[in-house]
Length: 104
Image (cartoon, rainbow, N blue to C red; front, side, top):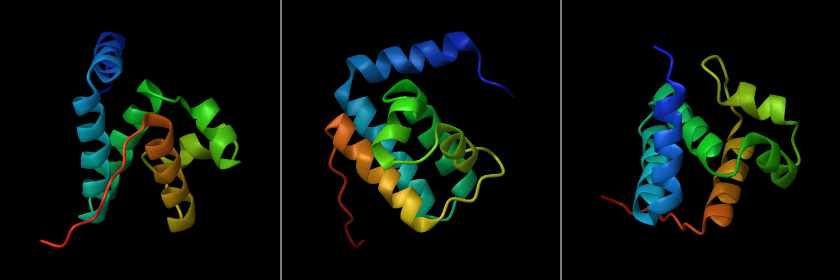
């Protein structure tokens, strides 16, 4: 099911206005990736990127073509670890969010 424009705008507005929601969404995306749910994790990261920095600006920051980044986070994308961690590092930096890993 495709997301509607209204839904995307609602998420973007909430991310712009609510730093806790922004931090939780990025944290959830990374947690999903660490748990092995690559598809959902990529999807959440794609939504986060679209609603915050955008693929064009992110591409400049990570020195990759925007289309490559879009493919990487698409349904058939299979990001390499170095590219994925570079993107996550940049998303943390650009959003002012610092994620930490803790053993449970």
